[in-house]
Image (cartoon, rainbow, N blue to C red; front, side):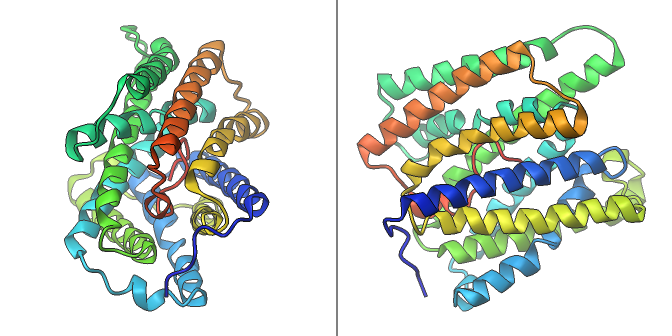
Length: 325
């Protein structure tokens, strides 16, 4: 049973969006806290598996469970899950190596790559205005990453550079996910996209367990966490599931183009949580670069609204920009 995504209750929509973004940042902090103990693929499993019951309950309450269980394009969901899960692994890896505000700022590159990929894979025309906005955003990303692109042989510097490159690669993959979802929504209900992503992310991450046992390779080698770390990861899954539901629900009460600019509030939440929990403060490079990326992103959102490219249904199944998924 499909629900109206365009009820005119902007106050409710904005409130739900802001709460969801805050919860995504809380989830990121929980993952970051556990990242020194567990590998990223194991964190992805906990984030996906423990979000799954909440999403199932929500789909049942919305009378969308049957819709979510009947895909029209099963392989499409598998590919979406593969891209999305890989992006999540890379982001969680980056969270263990970089400050939370920096991961958030680099994540804002996703809309820029989405515009470029839409031209490459969907044949969308990009005129000078949107191309200039993309260039502005990418300059901002490079400013954020510049301090990490050092040839210093110091191990800490090298790990930070690796973290920045991982988060950038995750942003590129999330852009591919958005392009893929734009195709999926032509035949699939949003409920099916949400359901099957949670399912495939849980299965794909779980498949790395025997591989890690066999190879002993640290990024894939699962560990037996203590109660505290296990609690952090279970909480991350539960919080992430609630956040995903609130993102989708917000689009029942407001258009995606209206809500998208509020996604950038994630930098405020990331900075506050990073400062309070981890003692991290955004550097001048992060602030300057994030400001340029946000400016480019807002210009793209404004231009897409002018062109009537809202795509509310597709965006309902994708976390806000800058969130760790």
